[in-house]
Image (cartoon, helix red, strand yellow):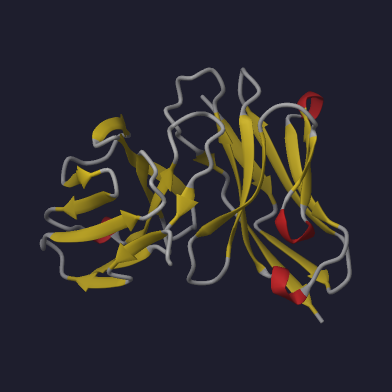
Length: 116
Length: 114
């Protein structure tokens, strides 16, 4: 069965510092991978996704993530945190191979706090 | 224009009641989903419909019954509400249910069962 693990339920950084949010997946077949952001009292918004091709994926708001098959990871980074980045971030995976019918498996979420 | 909308935003009710949550998308998508986010923020899919047909039905109590009157709407009816049903319910839609299709989420409905 597929699972997604986000290391660290809370991450705190200073404004201007590097943001690193960790995500690992377990799947017999490398899945398609997604990062979503949820601002308070709002729905989830797609930040970026990896399907095929280049393993370094750039998303909105200056975020990027790198798919590393050997490490079964898809960590999210941003070089310089901004106060507006404070939110909860979810990593998600979808099984490749046409049997998932769109089903996304989510990690537990990581709350990012940005200090002035 | 809101792409995926849900009503109501908040729902407070007593145990044993029956309630419905409505979802509408104006993106022209063929596939819609219901997710449940529990108190620990864990998100899990419940149902998915494609062109009004059920394609995903996770292990959900049969007190939960989704209904899709047309491609743009997917409503969730819950019978005999229990305390454990308290959660945030998110509706989502995607162009299709392909592996790379992006899902667009609604703002969520916070259900509190007393």
